[in-house]
Image (tube, rainbow, N blue to C red):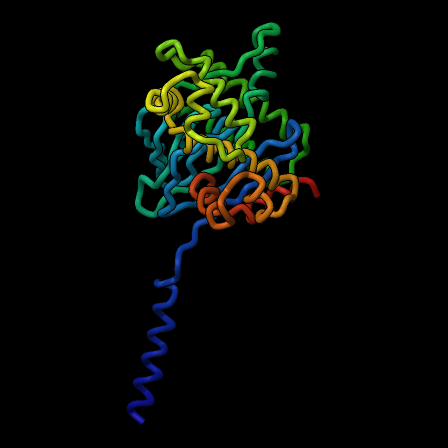
Length: 299
């Protein structure tokens, strides 16, 4: 009888302790907002996830809701605390990881350079350019509140007109207060244009199984100097940039409804697991989950 009581007590204690041992999950919810022909946004909560070096075709503009994030951008390590705004220019190489116990939670949007170019036309009497944000982290309470207002209206299914009005106002003020003309990479041994040509080639043909020698020929450099100068100019080795170009194409195909297994093949990944691994490291979520959330925009 005593043994039975001990067994019951053991299970009661076990049930009591279960919530304490409950696994804390991470998540990243992507969506395409019905504004300006669709702008990608994310609401994420990370604890131990570490983003590898990667790039986005759009700007990353996010607000830290909880905790702090540490990330690499523009040759330096930066820390963004709660209520600060993260700024990453389009095609800026960057990373991301927790800088506080318990991780970090944030919301971000990814407007394309074209969205800012349309604003510059209004601002500067027809002059078209994409701004460059020199600061990686800004503490601007007014802009933080405006960005929160935008996300809040989106959560409450605001009209397209209202969403675009708030977004336009925020991007306009952000441009006026914190931007400059885009800083172009300095020429390296007179080969800048050739290196840009290689980058554009990888962007156009991401799935191609091209050799190092072929890329070096396009750049008109020896393989050794090509690798060094490409990495110096774009902060990624050629093979790493090829992965980013493949991920850009993969996102486009996933949004179009192509099955992830087909996307992996079409984008030049070895197999599904290879694709999944790189996608998760760069975007913090799986291709299938990203697709489900992105396709909702069309329905």
